[in-house]
Image 1 (cartoon, rainbow, N blue to C red):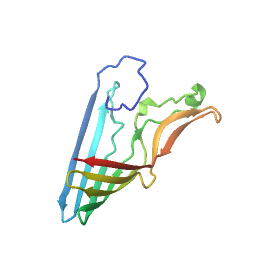
Image 2 (image 1 turned 30 degrees about the horizontal axis):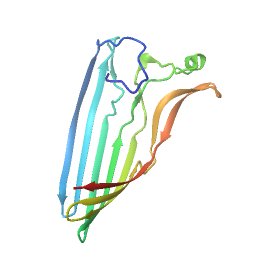
Image 3 (image 1 turned 90 degrees about the vertical axis):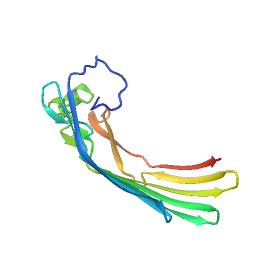
Image 4 (image 1 turned 180 degrees about the vertical axis):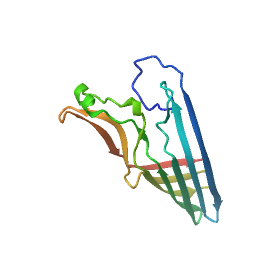
Length: 189
């Protein structure tokens, strides 16, 4: 399952006859909430490989090589209430892909992959930024918290899957930009 992504079902029996290897280094720097602000920075440098049925070691689907996550925030005391501003950023190497056999894909009207070179291509680096603003109203017996959150503020594009376009009669890589804003209210007792 080292290379598994979503699927709608299996059309063959799964056999566990291969090997996987993940090796890397994680470093974290953290400041707990003090004097109104906090931060956490984490960096991972790693490799993820697998040995296929042909006995060749290859990069696994999620062998991104580098992931850096950073988050931080500031709280402002306003009487008995608290205004919070928080940011979360993520920078990572691209997901691995198997090259597409374009001619065979066009003939069969579905994606056909060059499995001899599995996961030899890599998407570009991605950067995500999430922002949230919270306002906490403290009462004697409960607290109410309003929050405005926006995921993927920068509108980073995300590659999804290969699809066949019947109008153009070709296989293409479907990409999406998903920005998710949300407003919420929570009560804490």
